[in-house]
View 1: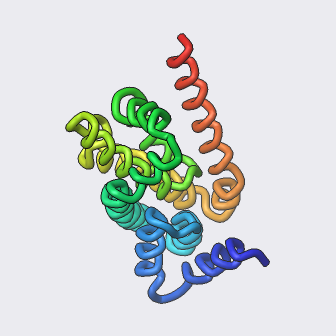
View 2 (view 1 turned 60 degrees about the horizontal axis):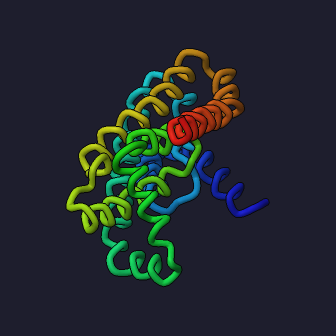
View 3 (view 1 turned 60 degrees about the vertical axis):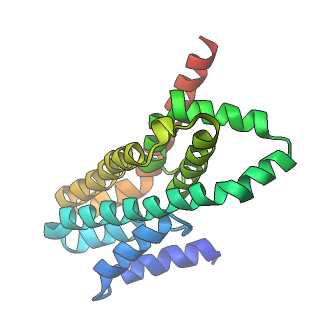
Length: 207
C-alpha cells in the first residue's frame, strides 16, 4: 500500500472514531496548508454514518478548510519576501512572475481561487500561491488586487461550501449508493471544471 493510500484509509477509519468530528476539522484545516488527504475522505463516511448531521459536518469542514487556507495564504505571503523573491530573481523568472501576478490580480484571480476551492486541484497550492502573488503585487504596485485576503476568503467560502454541502446533501439524500457515486465522479466533475476554466482563459488571452 502506498503512503497516500495508507493515510486515505486511515482517514476513513478515523471517521468512525468517537472523536471523529475533531479529526474531521483537523484534517480539513491542515489539508489547506500541507496535508495531502482531502477533507472528503472523512466527510463522506461521516455523512453516511449519521445523515441527520450531514450539513453540520459540511459546515465544520468548510470553516476548518477555509481557516487553514487563511494560514496557507499568509504562509505564502510572508515567505515571498525575501525567500521566494530572491529565488525568482536567482532563476531569472521575474518576467514570468509578472505575468502570473497580472493573471491572478487583474484578470483571473477569482477563477483561480474558485477552481482551487471547488475542484480536485490541491487547495493548499492555490492558497499559498495566492498569498505569495499578493505579496509580490503589493511590492510591485502597492495593491494585492483581486488577491486581497477578504476576496480570497469570500471566494474560498463559496467554492468550499458548494463542494462540501453538495456532497453532504447527496449522501444524506441517497445514502450508500450515492456515496459510491460521489467517490467515483466528484473528481471527474472537478477536472471538467478545470478544463473549462483553462479553455476560457486561453480564449480570453488569444481572443
